[in-house]
Length: 389
Image 1 (cartoon, helix red, strand yellow):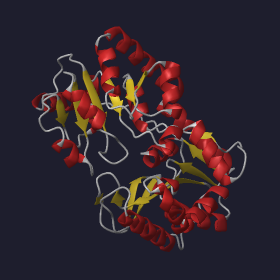
Image 2 (cartoon, helix red, strand yellow; image 1 turned 180 degrees about the horizontal axis):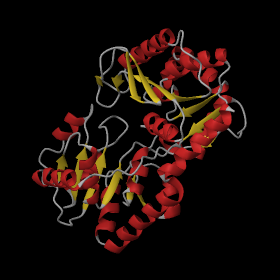
Image 3 (cartoon, one colour; image 1 turned 90 degrees about the horizontal axis):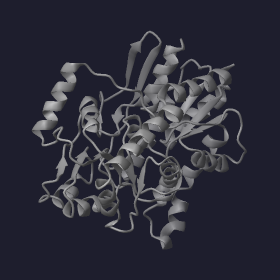
């Protein structure tokens, strides 16, 4: 999302862009073409896809092998490539960022490193404390690649001030004029009447009607980053309708543990127009993240999607996101440590429609004032233009 949005913003300003990406789709868990592919997307945008083996789970040995292969393959593909004026590197994957940073350093090309996740530290998240030192020793090559990539970046981009502070500490320096906070916002999406009507009919057929009932929605990948137990508990003890749109490794567990709940509906993967109509029929967005240290530093695209849609956010994350929610009154925070905490928050909102409307308006206003798409991406473009000169 970051890569294509920034690429299009650069093209609109008249720049020529080469976008390097993996042939393997991280979210759909399938290959796009199955090999090396160069796509002439437009006159000023070329997309180069890097082959790799693929993987099934977000955190797994297969993913580590996939990323190692990506790094090896991009090294081969970079031979003979003309050097750019400036570069913007996504991080992770560690291996591709490291290989590209070495190539850019050799070519004396400055780059901004866009850090979205605290790799490789998140790999230690589920390791028993007694084994953590041993695990960290095993990850020494990854920490080496991270340090090299961070320290050679002319600038660092991160989704929040808290995350940028963490990155600068890893880079071993203070903030400079090339560093920036770049939230993961997305542009407004517009659809014609036929598309929206078809999406509305599809949602109607799945029991998600435009009836004005209290509805709480989650859209995303059903993986280990989220704790869905509070949602199941709330659905068992309240008549609010819960919508889960997405798929992933935890889908079957979630369905099995909520199979008798008529007010919890699974939609699977849905299209962007279906998401738009779904959010128009939603009262609050739920972000049931596990309250982990790397999540506390960041604010994910789910929160900006909710703001853009003018919806209150009910979240289990403290830290940067919790501060944002409380400071601007755009939602409520619940405790992931207490299974009934989400239920209690939703009951509070269910009995106060005016409170929901106020938070919804605050949410949209905050997006327009601080996180609007063109403002964020034009700012990155200006950073790259300045750096290239």
